Length: 440
Image 1 (cartoon, rainbow, N blue to C red):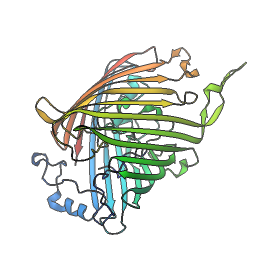
Image 2 (image 1 turned 45 degrees about the vertical axis):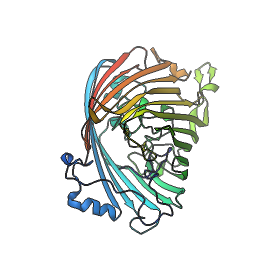
Image 3 (image 1 turned 90 degrees about the horizontal axis):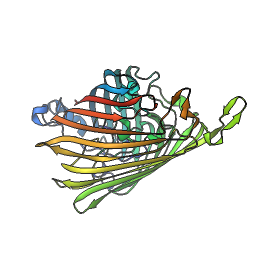
Image 4 (image 1 turned 30 degrees about the horizontal axis):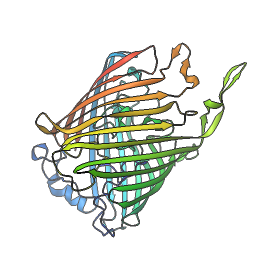
């Protein structure tokens, strides 16, 4: 289970639909369905309920979750070079529901540790955005460096009422632009970054960072958030040394609605980075020694998405949980995402993506699928010429996946991507992938 905050910047509590009025000492988080001894019993966890001990711990306010995802990808044509790679990432999440413990009403503390090993084809594909988010995060330098273990989240959340909450600590940003059919962190749904989030945020949004903010929920279907966080990544550090390296203010509003019996939703987010040096290419000067590029201390971006079920085979009693990387209902839906950024400072000026997704196909009610197309436009910057290598002014990507649900706790996904490279000298890359997600 992820933290109460469903990807800061969006900041939607996982229990928005179940948060009890008055915040009685019955807990912030609902108790997951641990019952069962494994996949044959229909449990969402391979290790089941541990003979009842797991449910007992959750009733006392302690929830443990472990996910392990493996990814094998091959660039079979085009890109920088044809190659194959394999790796995996594990996530351990501990939620301490202090409200359920009767220690502090309305309080939750979440810790998440991650580990990563192996290699990726992200560089081999030659694309401006990763073709495999699963192996791109947590961020490391150099890229693809193994991460034995690192704490990417240590977050304290305090609800002051059923409508208002505050949070502070270390948290992850990937998946902030959550969507019912295209979102997450690469462990479910699409593999490529072009469909997991609006990449106009890449200039100043880290993966893991320190910060805080406020959540306001005037209704079960509307959430308004404001947050401020460090713009430098702290995936493998405590993050305290990044606080003087620039900040980001993020304001978001998200809602859900119904078109007849069909659920839909939307999200809009504005972000402003400040107290950090950005190259101001709009103010570049031509000098006898070449191009002199001045700097500015701020930049901005705006992104939004919308999703809509086109048909459903079951009823939805309340707001859907859109941060879990899975279509909640059996049916078919559509999604769209757009993003704009400051063209004077951001190499990626505009992004757009859209497509279809759903749950249930070929007589298999739990299988998931999706298909989408994405377009990104680079800014008119001096980066357009890197020696003899020219950068494309726009790139296109098409991706399709099919998630074969072996059990609720074991999902194998087959994926194919066709993606324009960043450099015009390279041919479009065709990338095949297989991902295996396990929940313990």
